Length: 540
Image 1 (cartoon, helix red, strand yellow):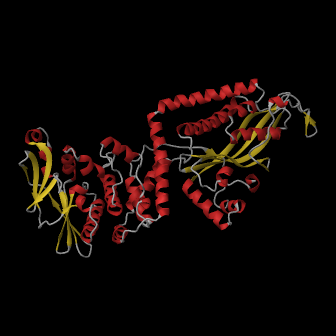
Image 2 (spheres, one colour):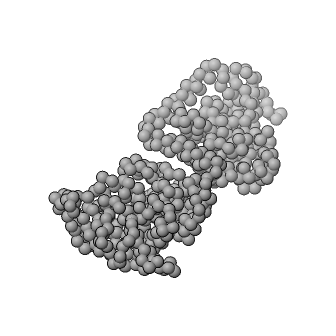
Image 3 (cartoon, helix red, strand yellow):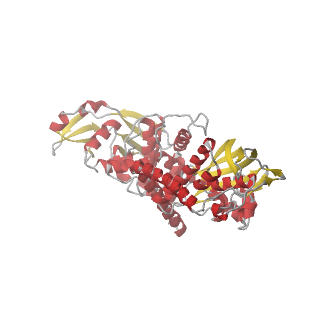
């Protein structure tokens, strides 16, 4: 039994962890009337509950002040904290009854502490659980040098009330089923950082064959966060995407099934096979990279902003270098349509120097800046981790989705209704192409304009787990400057959609299995669900 909680002759003692003099300087004694609960789990699993509180304080032989209170029954058990370390039948019953009691308290919105502040005993086959007064227990535990391992591992400091209880229940359930705690750092700040970054191994990677809905509900409880301030976004009109995700996660956490928990608890511990361990190791490795990148961004925010500015400057230097060496793209000798194809090649490859040469004027700055943003994002990721590359949508499919690389690029490009690949073999200045004199039998006159209708999908990532697709239809305006066509304006609209990377990868694998490994046929299957899949001619 911990020195924090002791039981002798049916009297519970909770250590304040303070000597008498220090105790007297606090208002801790005023909390003696705070209510805890005695919960009875009957044989038919019905629940009884009554209030319980400490009645007095006592100075122990060690000079520490203790809160004391007598149990209403003969206590023969232990703290749930100790029972979580055991796995015999008696311990399993204690875990089952305690989880029923915890879930009851949650539904009734009654507070409870971590497993050290939950006591379990059995009387005539009934489970008798005492949940010590939650706030008093937390304050006493915090005074102890062992707070991190006794109570802190059950607490998310950013939460309160019902959500704090959801988190604590998930920690206890995770430990009961996997044998380990999800967040093990005893240092307060490090542990809270792990909680904030969801730096734990999901239960499905810890317990082989666990019910997926049960695992998801426990994982969701560990990811419980407070809602962010609601804000308007163009993508979702009136609702914040982050707020929706928080509510969906909260709903999953609430769906926790005690019945499924008990069924999993009673299962014989299965030996994980090599494939299970491989997937677990793979997940941990990937998670380590992702969290490392996230923390790098937090630590180096100012430096990254400076790096981004440097990359933009570098793009301009590259543009100047290419210009002086005749390596720049040019629309000299190209038709209006070929010029537009060169323009979209620049977007597809996030080639800012190319766009700067083909598109001119204030109306085109936004397109160039957006493309530069994608380029900078991709370069920053590579700078932080050389393994964090980016593939075109076609290259991603050719990898069969078996990659952690992100995607960026154009699919299903059409100009005036005619399909074209996203990449065009454009000329460079040192090719010294001759200017066109006419096009489609008509003489070209300086200042004349032409419009071309375009449609395409711009595929990119919105974070590591989400594919964002902009389905674009737009009209490009070109002007003949006397020697070549220049893109001078673009107007259109975009329909945006979001897709889960994990689901997309799984569907790629399934489609390849159904098509016998034929990528073109697999894409025909995928296209029924994902409207951004490249055309068959783009896959060649």
